[in-house]
Length: 207
Image (cartoon, rainbow, N blue to C red; front, side, top):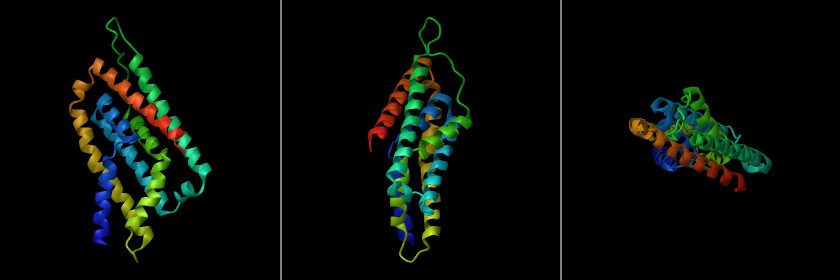
């Protein structure tokens, strides 16, 4: 049992360190709108992780493996969400104010909106569901209660993500004063927007 838990914890940390759409969204919110908003995005992302873990525990994610239609619906939805978020970032980068040609000062994203962005980005990624249903059961020891272990692994997965993301958000928030300068912010919006659009297109064409 302890060996399985230790192996899963190590694997969960490695998974958290792999950058993806959630990483882009979280760091963008932390840099552009501050540490609290970034943490709200983290909490939203972890709710998505927990939902996929619970779905795997109760067998719902198996539908993604058994039904190509269900997988495609979630895949296209997730791709549309990423492209939409990226397009909004690119549009914000184009907005200028005054003669200096700098981006206009727009209202900061609320913590609630950042939370939903984190949640939707994670929940609309079918690969996370496929990964959960194929990854978590591998660490269940022989003879152990499967449902209880999968639920425990889901919580551990969330905790590992939090341990990885919260220091990143804190660091991004600490240097955010420099990064939120108009010219730097415009560049950040351009980069994050292009990355989100690219990830969305990749998800859409990756059958």
